[in-house]
Length: 248
Image 1: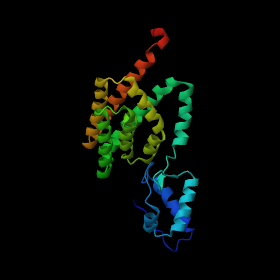
Image 2: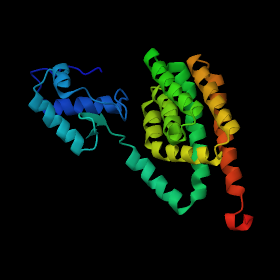
Image 3: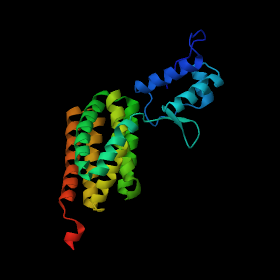
């Protein structure tokens, strides 16, 4: 990670300079939600600061909501947009579940743009991460791992968003990650474990992946739009069904 050594003659407190640098890396999209910071000893060496100064900066960043402790130790970058974006939308969904269709419209626009920019801008490292996310999703689909499909589905789309190198777009996508993941859980349930429909979804993901890897921006956009149109049709078909009591 591109941490810059802190000059010994810095006029501000060293911990403040460290904190500001990490905040800047987050705002620039160099550090994304879920990214793990290096171990304290390694990070202190990269920054050229003492561990007490680094620890003071990390404590402040955690208190301000930029990072959080990980279950495996150390710190990971927090999704700072989630409380601003996801919580209000989640409350709206609770009030009116039919607004799920609105979330899908939003996804369709965001992901169509994401695939275009990812196809145009992804680095070799980005393509490797997208490939790993796709491989995990495909393996879960082929093994009928229903428990993890939604999470892996969302991770694939977020890997594409991260590869756009558009900080605003990537942060918004991460901000609505919870809603996206819940929506994916629902549409994977809607297919009622129909193998043919699951194969269609996987084929659509394959088309998106192939187009991004081939750096074909227009083909990637069309693949994303076809995928989301398919998902919207499933939602709309489910919403049109009469209540269970009327079917009995």
